Image (tube, rainbow, N blue to C red; front, side, top):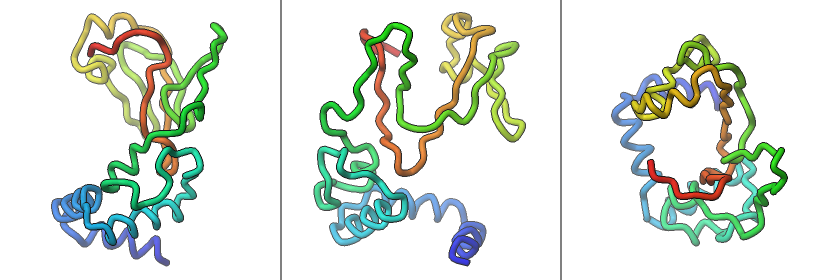
Length: 156
């Protein structure tokens, strides 16, 4: 019943107002609101705070700071085996497949242009033509920082 009310609320409230409200909640530094919001989120989604550098709601500036929290060193060890596949993020693979004609097919009939996903850079897109893709779904409880599992400097 609560889920149905929440969904109905999203349809009744104007989208601009809803977006503004969620943005305000994510950025608010009013301690009691921020701490309550973070505490409820941790409880609702069973977030494992034992992995986090900062573990209590009052340790975060706002919800966004919590959502992109740092982990303790050593919590995500990268496999050094050259045959290992290393994910850049927590989450579960929701889609796997071939890149066909420069398009990546996703669930529910949506597909995406490889060039668009790579910021309009057709030269970079050429390196992936007829390759494979994986989509990683991050649930609300997952760690939301991305890491580059190779040595080097990210330039673009």
